[in-house]
Length: 411
Image (cartoon, rainbow, N blue to C red):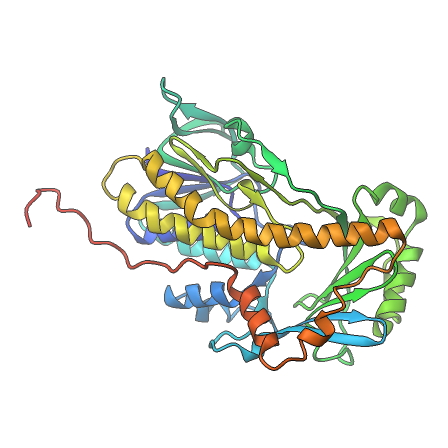
């Protein structure tokens, strides 16, 4: 028996496990893969996340690992470069977005969780079913590992197992799509010393497509956009149109696009924007992509999942420290606190997707709104936009640990 079982070792699940564990709550985190080393996952650690880790005493150790400090978010359109956000202007000791392979970040968090008494991270464990009481309340999970099938009872079960959440399906709480018009084809190109030093997080717009470019410790991550469902046609055309587009929009990469030789070097990310109606049922809570899928544009997915974890910990720690399951009122309060921010982020992303779809339908070049060129020239706007992306709407603040209740009832 454990106080909390968390299915899914992504950023939200790992941070929640750590926050609960530091409060003395026993946690078992189950991850179906044997390690966290999967390519082209979100790599962006925003100032909010770094400030949170600093408060927890973890930032210095984390940032001793290889990472890239991105200080600018820019749009490139024919004849102009628009700096939409300048993180260097933030009033924070972490005035940048740290680009770090997510596998390294998760390995780091896993070590911190396992160092806490009563906490463990178990990889290679696939949840196959929910344990339920006669009244339908979730009481833990059944999982499978190399040794067989096991039951793990828990006072609370948390699903943080991503956009294709197994726990969400087992609970019968489907995600409803809000509409996405784009898919992304990711690949890597090497970085050269002569590349522009101010290239951090950049979008390059052209007719029918745009390219996202992310700096990193293992070269450039390049994201080539496709119309939703356009992968079969792109694969049939081969990589030459992609190489030609990238070389045309980013001339300083033209000397190495030939290194993209075939589609086996690419990873398709089917972009989705969706959320479930209810993030919880008695004994079960969904967070992160399990509850709401965020588009990768803007790199908000990790930030939203970690903020879900902070809000959840604020509500769950006082409840679970009593030794009783978290009530429905507690779980509902978590969704009530976080859902307005998620709705706001997703609404903005849906507007962007609709604008892109309309441009494709009408045969117009894909481009950011023209007014951005003028608005971002106003003093202070780049800092405001950087702050909006760095912290998101209504960011939760980690509350101090509550004192433990006196088991004797005396004061």
